[in-house]
Amino acid sequence: MVIGTLEIALRLEGCRSLKDKRQVVRSVLDKARREFQVSIAEVADQKLWGNACIGVATVSNNAKQAESVLQHVVDMFDAHASIEIQSVSKEMFRL
Image (tube, rainbow, N blue to C red; front, side, top):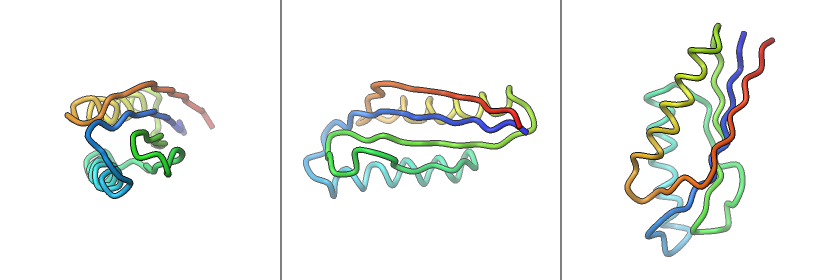
């Protein structure tokens, strides 16, 4: 079993309040859950309306599949017009 994890630090353009931030973040997190069947949540910076830190996890039977799923999630964030990726950290664990 392979567990892939991802931490993405984001800058949210155009968010002027926590309500704006939550709307953007929630829509992207819901889309990632639906399309890629990952566990995903905002894990830090909850009170900063211009930033977000997202944690993602996936489980697979091989590392290539886990890597592919995590890369699709990164690509989805990168394609969003009002989101700028500041940093990405990936890790793979084999059990």
